[in-house]
Length: 138
Image 1 (cartoon, rainbow, N blue to C red):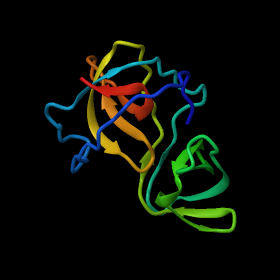
Image 2 (image 1 turned 180 degrees about the horizontal axis):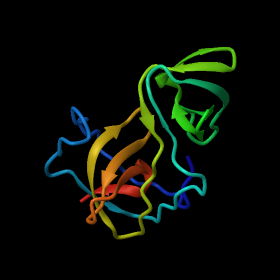
Image 3 (image 1 turned 135 degrees about the vertical axis):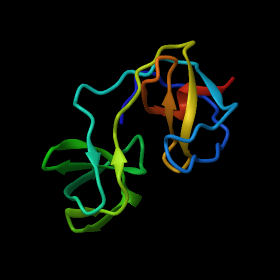
Image 4 (image 1 turned 90 degrees about the vertical axis):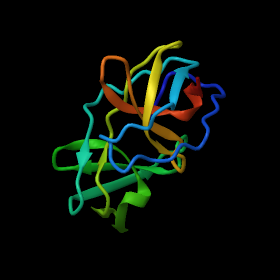
């Protein structure tokens, strides 16, 4: 997972929604820096998928790079059962990131404090991950 800005956003721990259709009211954040998305297409993995497990991310240590039959992406290591370089997905994950620019307002749908990212929805209804370090609670 990569983003263009560095800096010190502060994200309070936000309770996770039961699922991404449940809205968490009153948790609106403003971007304090731009977030650019990676050039590769997003990857969705589902429980039971078998993936090749690569390196752990040095910037985001909760994530490992995986190669699935239908693409590649960064997935939290805790979502995988790993044996050597092969992993079986334990919990589904969607690597979609949400592009946004400084000053944009987003609603947090799900927070993942362990990874340092939040699943957010913008004013147009588009959703994806944004790192805590570019978010601040409005």
